[in-house]
Image 1 (cartoon, rainbow, N blue to C red):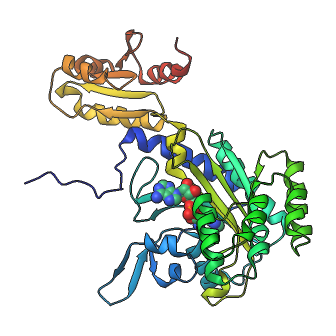
Image 2 (image 1 turned 135 degrees about the horizontal axis):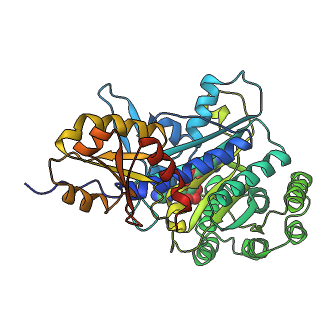
Image 3 (image 1 turned 180 degrees about the vertical axis):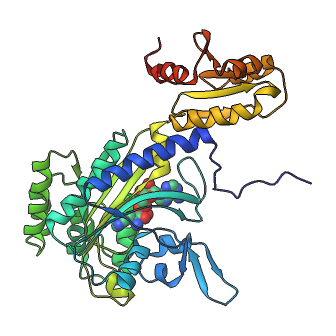
Length: 413
Ligand code: HAM
């Protein structure tokens, strides 16, 4: 019988990996909470249609779609935004706006696995529903930045607005517009030029190229002229500038998903190779496509797994860890002492095998900070033997004294 393996593109997380993941997740949750964002959850699978309506071909090609026993076409969620908007339409239409929601959820995309790219991956995201103002857009970016920085990661942030490119190609057919945005998203200049040439649109290249290379708003508006969004875009950027947030303007950001309407942004971290995008988001509208009212929204998702890879985290197990060693006489007492120590906040593990104290001690020194020994003598005296596994100091003391000594764990040399 061959050894069964986990599916390609998925990962197992041993405790040394799971614990730092949880610690970072908690920091992110806490930061989102400080901004008034509250956590939501949606189903792991949805009606496939939810994602086919407006997510774009890129996502559709990668979707896990299946039919359930009732013949329904379902999909494992490839992202959370569409699900959150569906939930908003289903459950939360009457709640006071804006709604500030965040999520931490796994997503599924049938992509070719490599470092930082998985078929099951986690997103930490937020959606601001019903604002649609420059201030709202600015808040969303500032929140994304605060969350990434609170996790201890430095990264670069690029911000653009789809209206820039769209203003240059608005007279083209939907298909041509779509193709152009696709090449921009992939940052593939050669394919863009080939495509424009084949469509007899090479004249467009000059202005597109001028636009996507621009680094200042004024330069951008010289190419686009007075677009209707100009004032909002200016107030949005002046809010960001006042906040001191670090970013670069990138008028060429196109985003892979189709639902964006205006401001868009992406974040990149080092040490990840080609899969270095750790953040993506922007302003969008989806609610009206799901039977709700047209509602301006803005949000982002952080690629949690990429953040963890970029941080290069190692085990963060909180100490001290106490190993309880016992002789057969100490068995009943060991469980009582263990609970007293747990109540005092220690991580406690009782030896479960009938082996000698020497073997128990060897095992304890591999992971624990203290050994608490309970044998016949300790029971008679109603005490425990406490051994500091780092300093090797050992003494017979009351359980209360043992607790006091172990509490000074962090102050040991
Ligand atoms: P997205 O850019 O498709 O946007 O995904 C967001 C982030 O998820 C990416 O920047 C990346 O870090 C991470 N990611 C994507 N695919 C994978 C993968 N296969 N393995 C590991 N990480 C991955 C969205 O999903 C939008 N829903 C973001 C958004 C929220 N827009 C508005 N609100």
